[in-house]
Length: 377
Image (cartoon, rainbow, N blue to C red; front, side):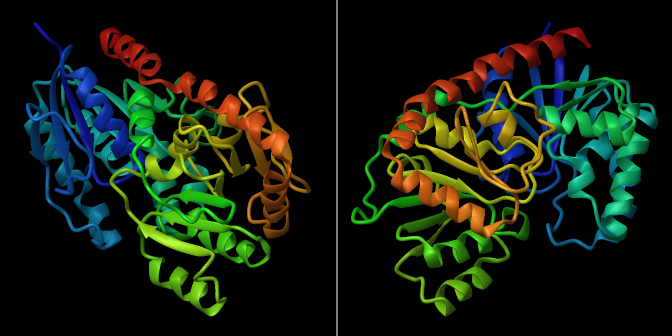
C-alpha cells in the first residue's frame, strides 16, 4: 500500500515554491498517494490531472494581516480534520508551515515536514508583522518532525536564529531537459544591441529599479519578465528616464526560457532570496549570469566550492559560474555589466560552463533526497 502524502501550500501561483510543487507532483504521484491542499484557487503551473485537490479555504491574497493571523488556529483545526489519515503532511512557505505544525499540536497523526523557502531573518526583518513571523517560526517549526530548507544559507539561518537544531538542505528541483527544450522555441528580440534579461516578481525585493537606473549608462537593452505591484511605478521610471527604447517590461510569460536563451546575459539585482530558481534556469539556457551576492542562494549556485558566509561589499567577484556584485550598489552593477559586454573571452567561458552547472540541480538528484525523507519518516 502506498504511503499517503499530503502537500500543503498557499496556491500554485507563479512563484518558486509553487513551481517546485508542480514538479514534485508529477514525480511523487507514482510512488505515493498524494493529496494537494491549497488555500487559494490560483493555478498557474501545470499539475497531473489525477491529483486530488482539497481547498482549505479560497482566500483573498490581499487579506488583512491581522485576519490572517487570527485565522491560523481555525485553519489548523480544519486541516487536522481533513488530513488526519495521511502518513506524511508536507508544507511549504510560512503560513502553510504554521498551519501544519499547529495541526500536529492539535493531535494530527501525520508526520509533519515543513519546508522553508526564504531566509527568515531577512524576509521578516522589519515591523510588527516581521516580529510576529519570527516568533511563529521560532515557536512552531521545532514542533515539526523534520525541518527542511532549500539552501545552505536558509538552513544556517534557521539553526542560528530560530533554534532549529536539525535542518536538512534540499535544493529546488529543475526539469533541465524541459527547460532546454522550451528554450529552443523561436522568438525575435532586438538583434542590434547587447541583450540583458532578468526574471522576477515586480516588487521591492527584486530591486528592478536599480537595474533600470543602471541602464541609463549602459549601451544595451534590458528585458524584464514578471508581474507585480510595482509594474506601473517601474514603467513610470522607464518613461521619465526616456529609456523606453532600452528597457522593456514583458510581463509574465508562459515560456520565459525561449527569451532567456536569446539573451547575451542574465542579470539579477535582488536584495534577498531563498534559493533563486531563475539563476539555475538561466544557466540551463546557456547564458552568462550576473547576480547580487544577496542572502541566500546566488553564491551557493555560482560558487559551489566557496564560502557562503562571505558577503561582497566593495567590488565585484568573478566566481566559477558567474559574476557576483554587492547588493544595492548601482556603480558596481554597471561595472559587472560593462565587463561582460566587453570581455568576449570571459563571456564565452561562462556560456560553456553554464549548462554543466545547471545539470547539478537536475530534478532526479533532488527527488532521491525527497524519496529518502518520505520513506524514512
